[in-house]
Length: 62
Picture (tube, rainbow, N blue to C red):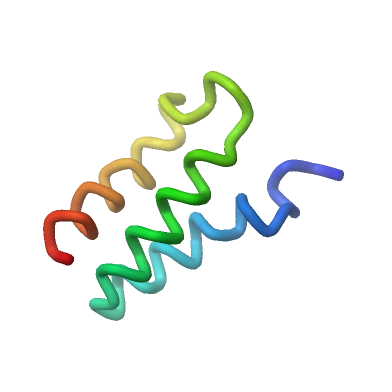
């Protein structure tokens, strides 16, 4: 199975949606779970910056 089709990976866009709706606790939980489930070394990949930044915003607003 491709990593982007896993429930854990799909938590990243769900987290962004919650952030946009102002559901900060749900956003943080989804983003954290999605980032932690990425394969080794991908949590800090350049493409994941959007999700890490969103997680910081959600955690600070929660």
